[in-house]
Amino acid sequence: MPDRAPKPVDRQLPTDEARDLISLVRDIAQHEIAPRAAEEEEDAGRFPREVFTLLSASGLLGLPYDSECGGGDQPYEVYLQVLEELAAARLTVGLGVSVHTLASYALAAYGTKEQQAEHLPAMLGGGLLGAYCLSEPSSGSDAASLRTKAVRDDGHWVITGTKAWITHGGIADFYTVMARTGKEGPRGITAFLVPGDAQGVSAAPPEKKMGMNGSPTAQVHFDGVRVSDDRRIGDEGQGFAIALAALDSGRLGIAACAIGLAQAALDEAVAYATGRRQFGRPIADFQGLRFMLADMATQIEAGRALYLSAARLRDAGRPFAKQAAMAKLHCTDTAMRVTTDAVQVLGGYGYTADFPAERYMREAKVLQIVEGTNQIQRMVIARHLAGPETR
Image (cartoon, rainbow, N blue to C red; front, side, top):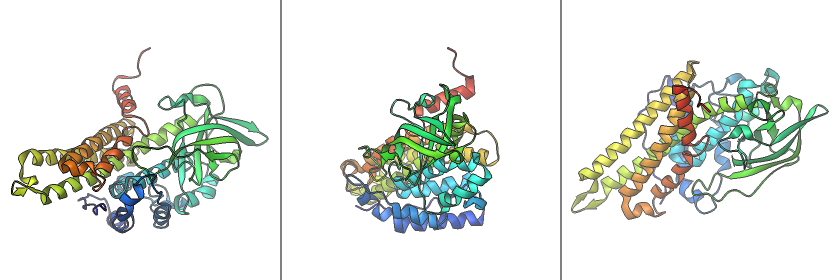
């Protein structure tokens, strides 16, 4: 059964331009993304590269970055609501835009003016697609223990190692790669911008996942990949700080995607409950189910308010890392609860692939894991509250 068109959310937007932008996104979501989502996510899945080409041409792949470099000059408050709309239509697309934005962050925030002028226009509006390479097979949550190395060689760097769990692995046009250039620990890591077609870059077959089959997740191998020093981003040893700064913003993207997915599940549950009749009346008339829908809607609204509050702190130039971790934690847990409840509302039909509720539930799980598990988010929040752990 095709996914229903997402029900419009009544949004508070700061400008007429933002309202027009959301209208454009909803049109693309309704006509280009949602109708094909269920079919393209089946079995091995199909990555909708043409949708990302359309989004790039429409100016939607660089929204929070400066227009001087091909971006959209939009605040995070607006950008995140665009992500929510896209994720409500298909999580593969919403999450893909979030990952692309994450991959572009290092250069946009820490690159030189010359680097930005050379690379960012194509990255943000030229049809390119990015990937972010931090995790490795032996370093997930403990990202500072990464082993991929970059060694100087006559004005170049030679990168060798394997990155794991890379969204867009094997299809990305560029990789933002964190590699070890110095001693052990976070201060020995440097960031690099690596072309996707560089000699020595290859990808393993995509992982076989519970959900999001249309979004390839794969190990990416760097076998003596040579990049010039002008593709080093920031100072030597600054890479881990860059990675963490990117993740603070990226977690807000995941939070927005989670609320979009949860909203889609709620819309599906409400539509089914008001149309399905048992005992001579719609099942939405039964108090137990009505209360379930009310709780789902309340959790979604709370999550939306939380990620927007964090976004407004970011837009104001104020610290937001704690609030980003809170938003990622709450919104992704909400997505898991809401999609599970949506399956329950649909009963036996919710457990079948004839309705999208079961896919939403499978997709929600990964959001509690990516860009820092929710256990890591709790650690981040606790450190802001009580300081570092004593050893």
